[in-house]
Image (cartoon, rainbow over all chains, first blue to last red; front, side, top):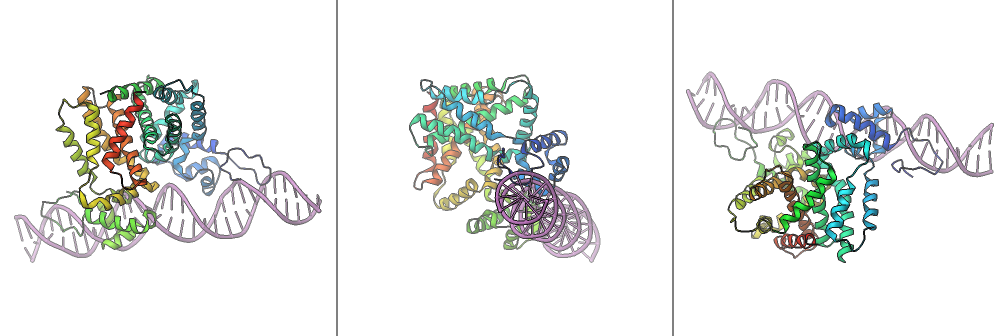
Amino acid sequence: MTIADSSRSSSRGRTPLTSKATLSRIGLELFIERGFDQVTVDDIAEAAGIGRRTFFRYFPSKNDLPWGDFEALLDQLESHLDTVDHEVPLFDALRTAVSEFNRFPGDDHALHRNRMELLLTNPTLVAHSTIRYEAWRTVIAEFTARRLNKPTDHLQPKTIGQICLGISVSAHYQWLDQAGQSLPELIDSGFQLARDVFLT
Amino acid sequence: MTIADSSRSSSRGRTPLTSKATLSRIGLELFIERGFDQVTVDDIAEAAGIGRRTFFRYFPSKNDLPWGDFEALLDQLESHLDTVDHEVPLFDALRTAVSEFNRFPGDDHALHRNRMELLLTNPTLVAHSTIRYEAWRTVIAEFTARRLNKPTDHLQPKTIGQICLGISVSAHYQWLDQAGQSLPELIDSGFQLARDVFLT
DNA sequence: TTCCATTCGGCACCGAGTGCCACTATTATG
DNA sequence: CATAATAGTGGCACTCGGTGCCGAATGGAA
């Protein structure tokens, strides 16, 4: 078992000095404080009390730090989609799922906002995000493919995946630009506004 | 005037040893032959007969090489959109514009295919592409904003920009996967298939 | 010829990321 | 308790992309 795995139940071997979650938190703090490009991996490693080499055993790159446990959120989205009633029209199912995927309970609003500001503002992170987005799109595409009775790699589900991501991303930017608006509602609006255009 | 500018009409100073176009061609050849990650900037500089330092005066990064003169294509898209009749529904205007933007005359099909394969396959290039895409989306968003009588930074035009890009990209992937299909037609289909979902 | 603008490219440097390997901590086993 | 097996740690050296600096080379203009 490698160190990158979250839970270690097998007992042999040295105890890890830190965790992905801890490193992510420390890194995020430094990034928010000084800016992503002004923080080196050495800085993070030092702040976490580990060696630079060890850092790269927890995260494959500095860019992955701000994402935290994105996979968990993805699983959440996936299992939510599994439970959607078949009576619900595809459009509404997607709209609701994407919207709810971005509803965060109470107190981590500020943190989440800072994280998203980083991810959507810094050019390096914006570029790197494409890799994360792919998994997200796949979840949408698979659901859509099931609903439409088509293979996952068909043009239609793939396109819908891209579109949902596009709507979500552009709502995020809007959310960052203008404080006070609810992200889920912005996403919902995005779906509606897009539909308006598609109806000519 | 800097070296990055395409035409140099002012006469003073040393004559440039090469050009962006030449460098792009040389780089692309090497990338296709050996793979993007297997070619270093030193390799390209050597093949072009210039110093490594000079390379970075022509291109800000190795990642920018495969794109060639993308700006020219963008201008083309923009000026095409300027001439679209106001009677044409927005959806059709976008569908046609994006589709035609990806119609390439005759003989550079193979080259364009290789270039796109590189850009859409290599992770580094996929990541870097986001930067290029932004300009593309802006062209779409500005047109849409004009049409809808809304500010460019409004949620709707931004979202439409993202969506058109998403449709285009997913059609590109389809085009790469299955030979023999026309890219413009795939894009056209993508728009239609997306519309189908949006109509529930 | 001299001046000036502009390109060239070597050099030294930085930061991300990797392969290698010895070291250390921890648990299982005899 | 001793020892083997296992897994994390981190130093070292290296590659590669990218940048700042600065002097050398080039070619038109005065």
